[in-house]
Structure formats: C-alpha cells, structure tokens
Length: 163
Image (cartoon, rainbow, N blue to C red):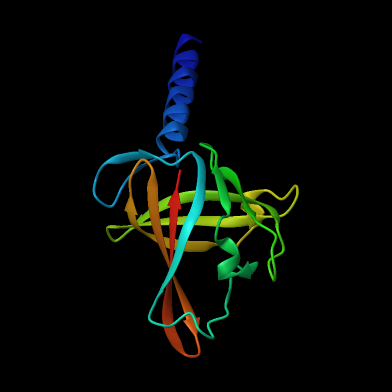
C-alpha cells in the first residue's frame, strides 16, 4: 500500500512539473533573454514588406482588415487563454475576440500562435489557427511577422506590440 501511495505521489509531482514547464508565458526571445509574455500588449505599429500600402486590402486572421489591428489590445494570460480587442472604426467591426495562444520553436525560429475561440468553445475543438514569426522580443516590445499571399506573391505584415 505504501508503494502505491509513493507511485501516486511521484506521478502527481511529474504531472504538475510537466504542466508548469509547458506554460506559454515565459519565452526565450530570439535574442536569448527570457521574457514573460503574459499581460496586456497593444499593436502600436503595422508595416508591410514586399508591397506598398496603396491598394493592399487584406483580411487577416479570418476576421478583419489588417489595418483594423492598429491599436488593438491583446490580453495574454499565463495559462494560454487570452483575448484581443479590435477598435471599432470605418470598415472595422470592433469588439473582443477570445483566443488560446502559445509559442512554438520550429527549426530554431520562435512563433507566436493562436486560435480564435467562439463563446464557450474549448481550444481542443478548434483545428485552425494562426502563426506569426517572432522577429524580436523584449520586456516591453514584441515584433511579429505574418506571411500573407496577395495576388500570387508573398507579402509580410509586421506587427509591433508594446506594453
């Protein structure tokens, strides 16, 4: 009986260690420093690589035009839950969208990824998501880059987040 209790305690300790080790909130930046992503981030700048803004009208994240994300606020919670709020203006339908987010390391590059969650929808029920390459990350600024196909060529949208 004592052996079973020891195995159960060891299994529980291992499970707790596994869940805390996989927490998405603390991330090694592309430069190597550990940065805590949890908290509120605001998109303070959006720029394009590979095309002029003139005539470039693209919906991103299956939600809104890329320009609508200027000034959006992203609330990242340590457990991977979170939300972003798009300001209402012009062609932009404002409001809060719930997300589940994480950071993934693929072949040495860091990616911020998220899934849009409808009301009451659990993350494991959502199969589609979005991945943005983390170009830089400091305690107060994050630069994410998203590749978009536009008229047969790849264009990059750069989002600067600040706290």
